[in-house]
Each structure stands twice: as C-alpha cells, then as structure tokens.
Amino acid sequence: MVLLAAELVPWGRVISYGDVAELVGGGARQAGRIMALHGAHTPWWRVVNHAGDLPQHLLVAAKFHWQREGITMKPSGRGCRIGRHRADLVALADAWEQARAAMARSATE
Image (cartoon, rainbow, N blue to C red):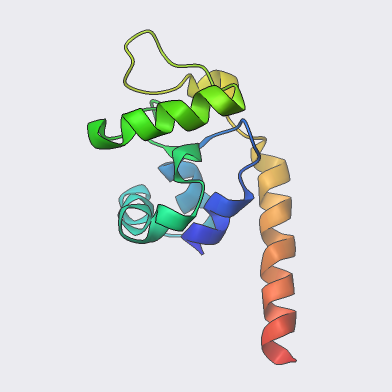
C-alpha cells in the first residue's frame, strides 16, 4: 500500500512519510522503512521526511529528478521545499480510494 501511495504522487509534487502513513495506516517510520527496502521502482524522490529532506546517500539522484520536475531545493541542500511542492492531500486521498477500489474489484474477478 505504501508503494501504491508513492506511485500516486503527481509529477512535481512531494509528500512526507507521515502523509503516506496517514493515507495507508501505520506510522511514518514504517512507511520510510518500506520505501527504503522496496521503493526503488517507484518515484521514491517524491516521498520525503516532514522537513522535505532525504538521506544523504539519496540526494544526488533525487536532485536530478527534482530539477527535472521543477521541485526546488532548500538553501541547505538537504532536501526540497516541501511546503511549496506538497501534493494536494485531499486529491491524493481520492486517488488512493479509487486505486484501492480498483484493486478490490480486480481481486474478486
């Protein structure tokens, strides 16, 4: 479910691990752990901590994606400006519900 939430974050937008946790249930650390272990094939650069930061070892790759998507960096260089680029959480929740419903339908077919 965490990976699905990451897939739903629109181009040029970010959400926090806490936003993911609120959407799918669970905790922010749990969402972060799932992203760290299994998120390589998702737009992982769109899921950051509450301050917009990512672990140091991910920043070079994230900067490439952020620049391409128009997501601006903080002056510290440790992350993005999450306040400016946070996804619309209501729209994301709607997309999440639609995706869950579609998954439920396909599971019963």
